[in-house]
Image 1 (tube, rainbow, N blue to C red):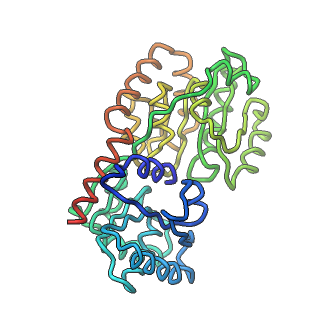
Image 2: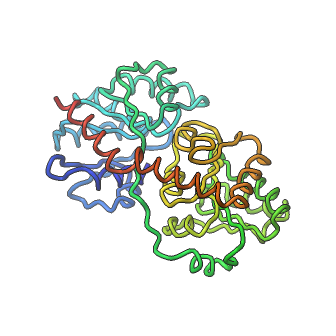
Length: 350
């Protein structure tokens, strides 16, 4: 979500739109915003006693800045906007939903999310799959707009050989990469199991894991138990993801729950072949045997088979990679996304 916000803010025409951001401190810091164009707003991960104070702060911000549109990102932000609207009449509310409506959400949070989305002028879903999950919860189709995330085309700063050299990996060694937060939804454990299978068939292969999260210790222990510790590189958080992608032979998106994947878009934009699980909105980005390969999220052997196929069949991998790059350039750029969201703003402000 942070990169989505960064792309949106940097892409909007400053002559047509003035933007103020109210968000948790870590989000404001991540966006590099100054005090004059941002306000701190404490939004917690779960519904609770912190919500009314956050709503009170937001209502004060709205009275001070008098915006024409309020744009909330995610279910929690939409809920805080709903509460703020009880205290102070809000201008039209636009909500972008970045993930499928969760089936395991607690009852109070589910009711709150439905109420908040029901008050929105427009609900933006980033994929058809997200839109369908919202429609199934009662959000009216006439309120829904599907606007996929868009990216700025990444540019690596170092070439393949340089990056591999820093990682201690030979130029010809097969390399797969996962870029994800290390948590259950991202399916990194499945990627490690797939690498175990792949490594048996290609003993000189490596798996790069870029990202951090609460499951890191357990995942590192898994590589020891499966006997692949020496061929898996846990890289932690990295700000050179384009370099790492360009140094890899295949990008694996092993998610078990996914609205969309910016990493898939970035890999495709760089011409790196992608293997992804057929969950959520991934199948809209990675079209099987057209722009990449899709596998069942529960079948780590199929994941290994698909990755090895792309590694060993360079010509077919190049064809899929080229089609993937063209797909991203045609439908998933930052400028396309920003233009469509700007249209929503203009419509809501009328």
